[in-house]
Length: 393
Ligand SMILES: *Cc1c(COP(=O)(O)O)cnc(C)c1O
Image 1 (cartoon, rainbow, N blue to C red):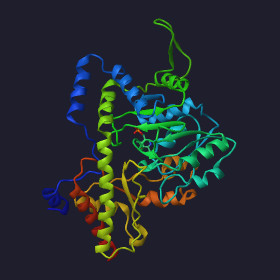
Image 2 (image 1 turned 30 degrees about the vertical axis):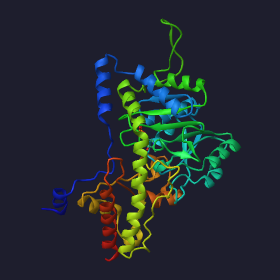
Image 3 (image 1 turned 60 degrees about the vertical axis):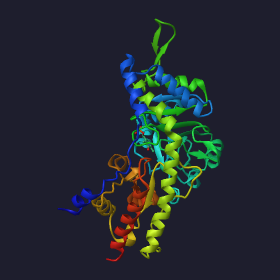
Image 4 (image 1 turned 30 degrees about the horizontal axis):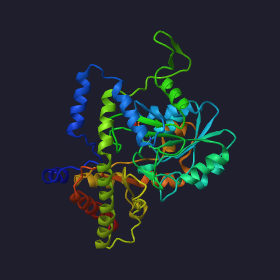
């Protein structure tokens, strides 16, 4: 029997994340299925209203997924061929894929090694006459400095499309992410803090732009009366169904509880990892923990940067060792500029060296509301035990 099999017999496997849907949600889905109206309808309208209330009355529209949401944000902002959009190389590839998909050019600015978000101090030097928008990403739900972001946008007259896919429930100085700003995009994909299985929403400043987004969402269709149909822009098929919307309505009710639990688990991680490092006399190891921010971030993930060079080991080996101990991990994310599509477009990993290093060494540890307190201790001990094994080699 392998180590892996032995461990699985005695301890349950902890995935890096797991969505949670309560019985009320399941019952509400069944009700929609029985209602005779399953695609976009009354539940979607109710969800959009609830989201708008949540974001302080700003207009909100939902879409089939976060990727469609961001693409439509770019279309609403009129961004297309010849335009440049400044973004980060450490994100889910959707961020830059949508820029390419509207015919614009992503410009990658290196990240801050502490926040792991785009380094706003390096943005000004990347701005050209073609720059039209800034697209920051809030990795793990930690926002960038909003004053600095919107200061740059104002100075250079740029739109901002916030890829807040991971930041539902996050804040900036007491204000909700999405409650402030220009176009703010969220994802409700299964792993996100608030999930509709697949889905997303965009928060606007004007009803005109929200209406334009509705057109892009459904084939560019306009209706003026019961039998007057027209299509005047090229739209897609990106609507959210009532089945998804009703899940979102129930997740919204559970969100405060989810948030509190994520925050508590994250605190335990800091304590547990530090005390394990101390017990193993490994305090000099440069294991990088997240920013210890308990006011702004929604703790979408708990990510560490492994001291791979120091230990002469690769991340895949550490992940396999953790898996053998019944612990699932994830990689969020390798730098986008290392992907073949982007290399073929002429991007170079070495242009953003911090992203290159962090993309190679970042590791997502399990964090989801359904985890037990004991899980954190077990994971911290396993991680530090594995690092000690390589440190002693
Ligand atoms: C999840 C995610 C997306 C895409 O959202 P989907 O709903 O999966 O299309 C985009 N950007 C970031 C940073 C994400 O985490």
